[in-house]
Image (cartoon, rainbow, N blue to C red; front, side, top):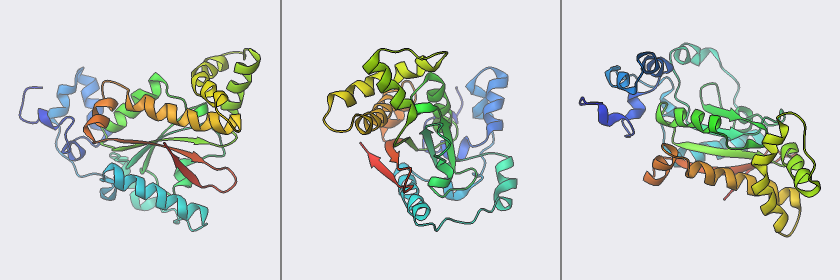
Length: 244
């Protein structure tokens, strides 16, 4: 990138510069990110989502309180449909478990276009998940990532069983279990409930993994332009407790 807009990539101004999937698509179509520099700056589809990491976390916490109190905001899809058809600017990204009982958009009382959600059983960090989050941070300008686990997690239970018994699971399930073994082993070494310990350790493991994920996330984290936190969703109350 050798023109006067090249410095926008990776700077705070990128939030006004790189907002639409169309812009990203143009870069892919031409075979390089240099195409991004020729794009026209656009207003964000949802202006209220153009916020920093601390404010984004506060917004998630307040939304979860409304959710647990049963005071959720009525859904109004029509008011944002037209704007979101042309782009997106989520204020937070969530790496969550695939469990059907945990829906981040509901748990944080958010609307369409507010959250960029990556879901995989056990909320484990995978290369594909990192790539998705890199896109959200680098292109969409999101400055908060939350690793969201939950109590009674079946994937973590399976990993505990595998570690303790040595049993192997069929298909690709064992690959997932292998990713969960390090935090499970940490949980086994601690006092108290093994499952509770392992779930917490797994969230912390995910947060640390994303903080160190090069070459994009670690750079943003060290520069203070990306906040990465962990949370655990309680299936009974719906409350999310921050950890780490």
